[in-house]
Length: 182
Length: 122
Image (cartoon, rainbow over all chains, first blue to last red; front, side, top):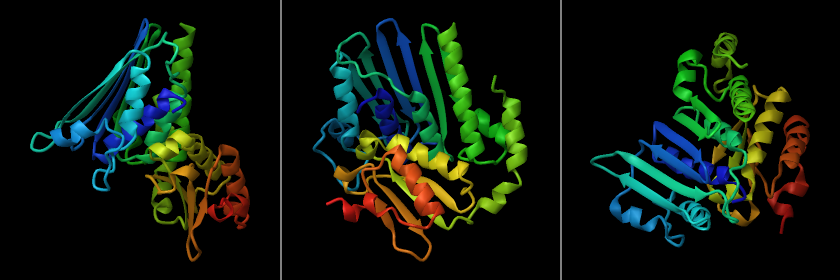
């Protein structure tokens, strides 16, 4: 993946496929470190599946979400000296899955975050019926978008309505400009 | 500054239109967004389709959606176009520019851009 934001898009698609009603994406940048957390309330994975998700050669039709996604994220993190941790709990607990990845930004092999705004837009456009909470914190401040808040205002108008998508795009652009200007 | 009041205004404007839009689309554009598609550049392709379809006034007749792996990973980004009463058209190795061209020539003009289809890619 050329951008970390593409890994984030890819991994978050797994959460949606797992039936998540809310997926939280948080990116915390502090000094030299970038910590990415993708937390969902989907169906979760059993211990057996959890053991295999890091293996790129394990994939079956019934567990289609298992493939190259996690191995690529793991590679991106580990090549900077960081790591990936996955906590998941399947039925009967159904606490969903939390993927945490740590990166060291000053490492030569750090993949740039890239266009994270496009990733957020793509997720909302593709999955207008599920909710996303996006938080990006840097030393300069915070950008936040919660689709649950937008949904309250929209009163049934779908989130993937083009005018809404354009509004979200401009909203995120402005939030990021404020972050840079501080 | 983008305000929530602006979003409120969008809601008021769209509220009546929602009913009309549902089920009215006769053409579906589907972009493969699995790991293979994303890694090959599907995100800007999807974004280009969404923009070109809506800015081009095709929102009433065309829906743009995402799907998983189509099974031809080496040809990603892959885009499938389903039109009522016609054979499915599969575009391969797509880019944002090719997407705009497909919207213009195929979705608007009714002429399949054969040079980008899977049949022409061997």
